[in-house]
Image (spheres, helix red, strand yellow):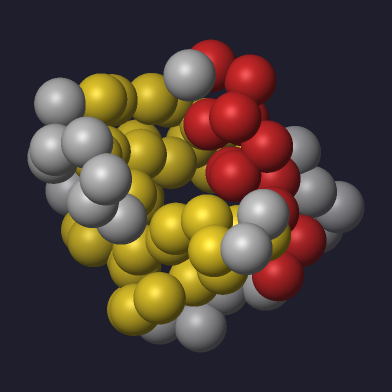
Length: 72
């Protein structure tokens, strides 16, 4: 299991830290705010995309994906 804390640094948003969890290798990453599941993301053809959940800005999804790439 992989677990990351991603602090959102995006204009207009204050103090949002997402918990990003991958239950098993190869599975999508789920992202939570506090204890609430927001959605899931995964990398397809070299690009991070949201695969389920509440609509999230592409810039935020890409930021989480870059963070995961750096830390894995």
